[in-house]
Length: 242
Length: 242
DNA sequence: TCAAGGCATAATGTATACACTTCCTGCATT
DNA sequence: AATGCAGGAAGTGTATACATTATGCCTTGA
Image: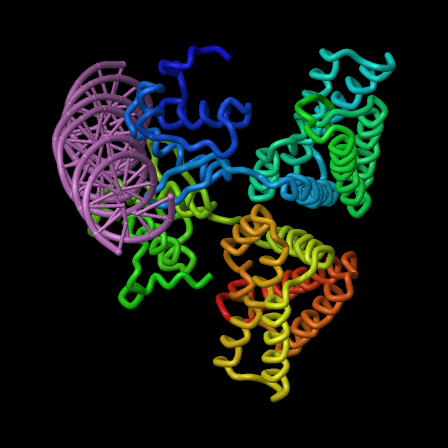
């Protein structure tokens, strides 16, 4: 939260106002500042962001393309709402896709740089878990590490479409690997162990095993989510990467 | 998804020019009239389509969101090109996703109407294949039937995100279930048999089997594609649904 | 001859005015 | 009171002018 609600920091931004607007709106939507189902008024947005309607419309069209907004002709854009069933399904979809990515990587190999990144994320995770339970700050740190692990594998899969689809999954509330879902230290630690196994399967070219492990790895988050939903139906944002 | 951009007859034109333009451009891109890698000039397009740049830009943004175009700020849009590796991978991705859809349907059941549609597509397919080999017109007919089968299952999965992702796969050259890939009558007939098995697995709630069969079903198209590519590296558009 | 820089041209980005559609409001009618 | 139809306010769709950025060509200097 850097800038006031009003203006957007123009100067050194990527260049186009459209991008600034879409970036800012995406943040606000994913961060929950703009509620699901909310209607987005072009005039009001352009006023509050101090730009004309043109870049606002461009940004809205982009976000609709990313699946964050719903659009109806002559009726404008609303923040997309996800039924609980689709939120849960999203883990299955992501599991299949990331599993496929793991398979591709096992078949195609990792670069030296990619190996280094992954090994470092594994080591850093190990260090965090050595101390037993960990503090909220450590959890934030681990989310970062976890994200690196998944991103590196995804990048090594060398498939843009696959990457884009997984990114879409991350835009589903509570489905991001960097977000949400509250549960036990034990589960998180277990999932870090998964990383070791997945990496080993990739290194040794056991592509089928890598795929299966990754699918199960992501699927376990779904299980944890369901469990936590049953315990406290109105569960909010907490911690626990995968 | 026959969006007849045909014009003329359909009295109820959506109304907005943006939609007309995006529909038309999508057709031209998927149909190959606009070559992959081609640059799309806003002014020229607006002149040739007899609209202003505004709806043209809107359409381009939409198509970029659908993954058909690449966009670079201040440099405009180009028709996305797919490396052969991504074209082949697309079958794996689609196989995973449609397999997942089949699983969902097996778990969640089919409506009476959906059952009817599928059964009719099975019967009509049977009738076509009874005659032995079939003519090009029959192949066109079967592509329609095949599309209905897949679309119905996808619809029954009741998951919008999944449907959208599979739709993206269909936009990859040579990956559409309605398009391309030349091969033997035998393979096509075999894939029609797959439909019977998949439907049976769904009806009896064998969700894992339905998923596996569907994944294999789509994967077999990839095999046929690879085979045909090896035989005639410059393979073009032919027939053979899946 | 070649390289580097700037100028001209073209293409994209943005702002704004106007047209059309939707939707709400309120009045009249039943 | 309920219904339905104006009429208007609000909001999106489109056109167009202008600003800004990219690109190619040409000049200029070594």
